[in-house]
Amino acid sequence: MIKLVSVKKSYKTGAEHTEVLKDVSIDIDKGKYVSITGPSGSGKSTLLHLIGGLEPIDEGEVWVDGQPVHKMKDNALAKLRLEKIGYVFQQFQLLSTATALENVMMPLLTMFSSAQIKKDAEEALTRVGLAHRLHHLPSRLSGGEQQRVAIARALVTKPEIILADEPTGNLDSETGMAIIDLIEKVHEEDGVTVVLITHDPDLAKRAVETIHVLDGKVEQSLQKAATV
Ligand SMILES: Nc1ncnc2c1ncn2[C@@H]1O[C@H](COP(=O)(O)OP(=O)(O)OP(=O)(O)O)[C@@H](O)[C@H]1O
Image (cartoon, rainbow, N blue to C red; front, side, top):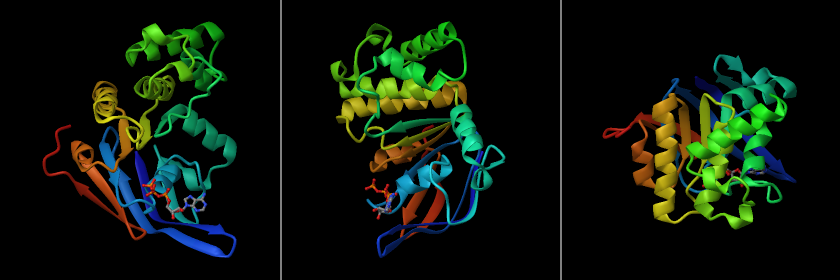
């Protein structure tokens, strides 16, 4: 489902040149639940951005569902992202002036009629336990509720892949665990491929495989005691 072949990625800021990923190859099968771990600044978010086609690579190949992300033009990439990928971020990234319902309707705006969009968004919010919060602005929701809205927004297009960048990073441990339970439920029920960045070793162990990022290289390994 996701394949990176000998990928290199660096950033230039003024005279500074940071080589973030040096020679990265990974292979994630359809329906797998994979965690990404590694020290701060090691390149975990960069790796997730490359998988999601959010940033260009310097060298190598990125394949998502058989499509060559490294060769695709902006329009084709936008279509791939919309149809295949749901993102969940640490900072929720909700539009503050839009209600929960409007935030979840947004990814669908170019796709369907308005009645269908509203129905799908309501269903997604109901699925994450927020049927009673449809018309709340993000500022009137708790952190955990805001992350549920973000998950509903990721799910509303029925993606095959969920990319989650530290989704529990801004939440207390109990709320964070409820969010992980929700992501795992979606993974199990829908067979969605999940790639999740986490600093928490216990959370990382719940995935079937772990990709550890260190010094620009990655090591992909099976969990010995995977629970999911
Ligand atoms: N757009 C950018 N421009 C310049 N440098 C960048 C950019 N994005 C990331 N970097 C640099 O690339 C390196 C890897 O960043 P990245 O965010 O991928 O690390 P991370 O492992 O996700 O870190 P954290 O765990 O702290 O979120 C860092 O040194 C960072 O400063």
